[in-house]
Length: 525
Image (cartoon, rainbow, N blue to C red):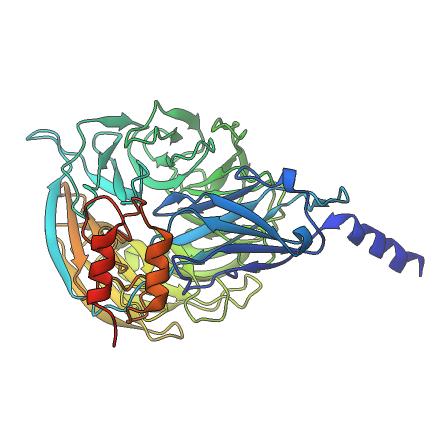
């Protein structure tokens, strides 16, 4: 009895997250969805802000908005000040400093989860609309390998930042605010030697997207803080292990600041650097990834406990490290897999609410799918042909049917798009031939029409190739349900006199009577 009584007292001393909406790993979330966090008791409103509840979308960057408190403060509702970008994963991170009105705190580990924004239905009629050089001048060889698609200047249109192994820098392509990608900006931003993988986050919480790169040639990672105008500041360089090949961002210690972890292929370990909240990082601490030649990493919650875990790919093996929420991880849960796992990407492939895993297995000429049992245990791999030497794997709902499709980039010459049948079984949908070497793909909605386009990178020909998804869309169907009706009218009126590009149907920079007339002209009988 004494033990039970003590247990109840300990529970009462912790502010607990009971439910989050949209739920973890959910796939078909409306771009207009509010984010709800249900606690077991009223929260102290002074402890809730965009510092203690951080929402970051891969394409749109920071998500801010109005914080409402309902049911006596037991539920916090974030009403975003902009629609979420179609097809993007959105990460929410709660700091352990959130407290209840009774003085209790959230657990020291904090709480984190992510969901995916839905895309509209599309026939995947991809059309090449632009081919852009990554070179400033003739004779230059940039060797672009990785990139991120994120709105850098807050105008509601997604821009592109590419890492270049040949020139050791990041170069930027801005969106012209109509879906057209402008020629490369006349600036480059120096990073370490031979940068390849890159990830985006807001490291200093100033509202502007930043990025980090892993630099194979000099054993460093670089952090570039964004200025909010399509440029970055001077790099912070940190020595890590030998041969860093991958990189991921996550909150490892419950403070809601984004930390960085990377695998070191030659050192065969992982490096973890923690963020002081201002975008300045510690010296690395090292941990073992549980695989030979740690090569790739992804940070997701593999057991649905609200703490981010790691998926690590290496040579002939993959592992899952369950996070403890204090900067440490449990023993690796391993599974054999053929070849070097050059990259891993995660998402709920079979619709059961758990994060599953895809990999590109380079030397085998194949990609692999691993299903998660909900506790971080992975199934044996199922292999799919990936052309010659696949070196990138990416996920997105390309056809808008509510599940995640898959694209493999093959250094041997093509991008292969696989359609998901809804339960994680894939069939080849399209092959897109590269001019020379398909090194990377960035699935993103460049033209704000609700479906996923593709920014493709050819590293040997120094090219950025834009492929638009040319599916038909009825102007005024804001919620992508195939109808123009009262729901869409309410969405338009809520944005009246604003400059929201998603509602500006004629592109004149304002929501007004002309947009209303266009919507009414397309009204569904």
